[in-house]
Image (cartoon, rainbow, N blue to C red; front, side, top):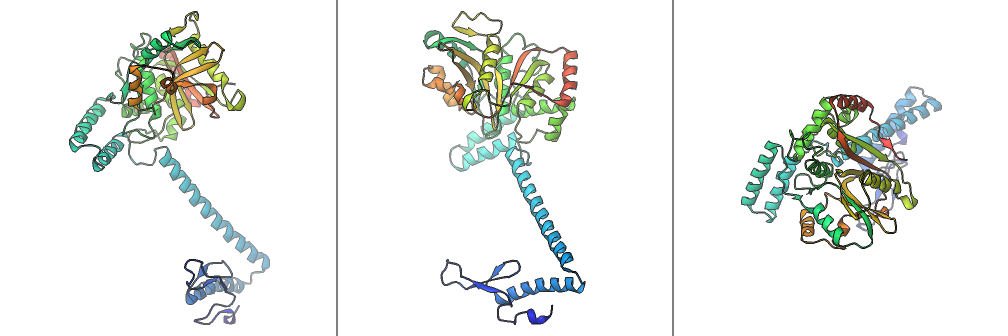
Length: 413
């Protein structure tokens, strides 16, 4: 291929064709398109050099006496290489997005997020500098002690629920409530990722009130702060629990915003010598994507071994950790209505403490909607629950640690 195929300086290269100018602005210069790769350009000399590069490459190939088949293979290989490069770039971008989404991008953890959020509050005039320094000192003290500061905690809700059901709700046949539970709301430091840790705190607050468990937990009471919970899960991994989960998180939660789920809750509870189980409701079992088997399981959990002749039963059962895609909550009880329908009572760590504290002034049918979830209100494809039902011996703990090498949840159905 000789130079006669090339355009002259100052005019469009041979084979390049003008395309309609861009509609914005209308008076803009015309665009010229490369006939080989369709690159558009307004500068004639630049486009000429660009096309000549294509022609030079073809000349090199011809100089090597490539036949049509070899040329086609070369072009195909080049296309495949570009596709692999683009796929690798896209996979890298997607992986980085997942890391950011699940708090594993190295952007800091609870402490860093708290300080950054409070600094913004000061900048926007929503917090006085003196308040910032007071909260910072309180937070650092809490982290040093490893205990939650209690600033997002609301106590007494289950007691208020018990009183309400005894006096109201004529359409309720039975209601079962867990042992007393504190509600914990997400704070500056864990907003957007802390629901799993907050639900563990909710569950833990109930275990500390239960005579069957509080002795087992006396060495780590009161309720731990989120960084302490992260440390405890890491300790469980170091002891050999759930190596697959440890590998997923690179054996590190401290200083991250990593989301945790049912497997991490189960691992931590077992590490603390609590007998628990994880149940996977991996597909809907009712019409319209509902999970009636989940509701039946919860009813059996709370009502087993108890006389159901009374209307309101405050049980010794701990609450149940409930996980679905993107969020987790805590089941603190269940209603059985006179028409035989079931309704779960759920604490959501996303509900602000201010709203929860209003309930202490009185619960009615309207604000009770914060807790109630009928089957039509739980329509995610999959749910997992973690329930506690006893204390492990040292031998049982060792056996469960060995079993966690291949973590398999019980599936229903």
